[in-house]
Amino acid sequence: MKVRVGIVGGTGYTGVELLRILAQHPQARVTAITSRGEAGTRVDALFPNLRGFYDLAFSEPDPLRLADACDVVFFATPHGVAMDLAPQLLERGVKVIDLGADFRLRDPESFARWYGMDHRSRDWLAQAVYGLPETRRNEIREARLVANPGCYPTATQLGFLPLLERGLLDAQGLIADVKSGVSGAGRTARIPNLFCEAGDSFSAYAVAGHRHQPEIEQELSVWAGQEVLLTFVPHLTPMIRGIHATLYGRLSSPMDTAELQALFEARYQGEPFVDVLPAGSHPATRSVRGGNVCRIAVHQPRPGQIVVLSVIDNLVKGASGQAVQNMNLLFGLPEDAGLGALALLP
Image 1 (cartoon, rainbow, N blue to C red):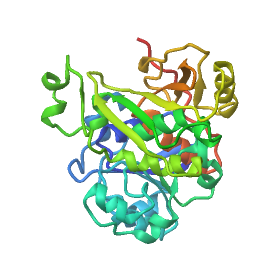
Image 2: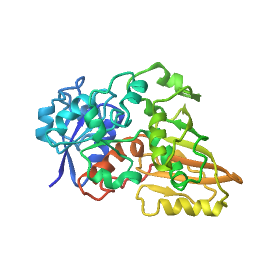
Image 3: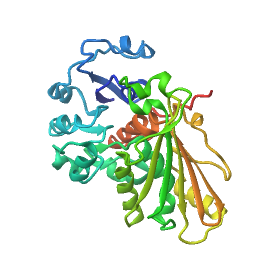
């Protein structure tokens, strides 16, 4: 029997990416997809790449109908939507995976500060499990509500984790210099994301504070066993997909480069979607385009000076692919089910 899947907010980039991945998932079937703006429109009329894979039309997001039709519902929606609709599904026994930010920050006051609204589902916020499988696999398996990590946080955490878990970095002086493709800003038309604005250009933004920073610091602090303070600077690059995180830190005790390499290889040994590259490598975003994988390389340019390079596809391992990975864990399926696609080159 296949897992019955619903998608709320299926017209954005993460929504169509979910549809692409789930179309070839051997043990899942999309039974409902919603969009207030496109209700009544066939899925393959809006996304012709899905012709022949779906015989569905978008519908209004009705929690009762979703609960009847689905075992799990993905929310691919802006912040503020899932906190209102998800509890109605959870109370009816439907599992929920939120690709938005509503359940990522454990402190509702922090959520209000960074997202400009009060949290309206604090009981469920306390029960949500942060969905980075490489850190919380067992908790995810038992969860009812999974908060899917953001794209910047996924690449940054996976790069810093092996060192912070072992207490090997100065946790007060970390730097994350991270670049994103334009799809990370969503499908809504905005002037900074237009081709003539973003093409042939490169810029930083939200230097004074990005919403993903408290999410990264929250999770890294758990694994470091102390407060982590991060300088986080995101950049917009003229490409469609990809996250490239260049991560800087200082070792708290000496290690040679071979030991660092061995540490990363041991930490991620057996992880299906983290690839630690050979020493001296420089991973490129094109090597992960379309794949649910994070590729990592660790460098020590000078004694004690650490540079970690971490790349993901922001729409796959940074969003929809990781969400499907979490769904597989929730339902006891092989973790890599539906996620075996190779990255696209060129």
